[in-house]
Length: 114
Image 1 (cartoon, rainbow, N blue to C red):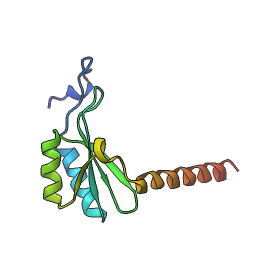
Image 2: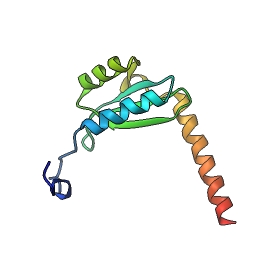
Image 3: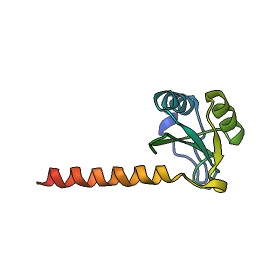
Image 4: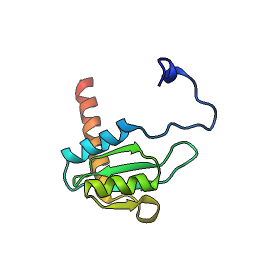
């Protein structure tokens, strides 16, 4: 990567692919949480294929991967199950986690306002 490559504009329709930092984040995140499952999100016109990791409590993270095969290899290496979001959807615990986080943000905002 050149010095100014990160400042170049992408052409229309061009999306950023996965890199080693994405894989490193997913591996590190899995090591720090338990009950983690992988959810493969298909490529869209806006983003490349992504892998969402969801922990036992619903906390989650998402990063790009180099296609479904790369997601399968990574989850096999990590020893976690992999599901396709298009087939099974997202687990309820993730939606519950998001709702709890929204409540906490609102409480903090109200207490900060006085």
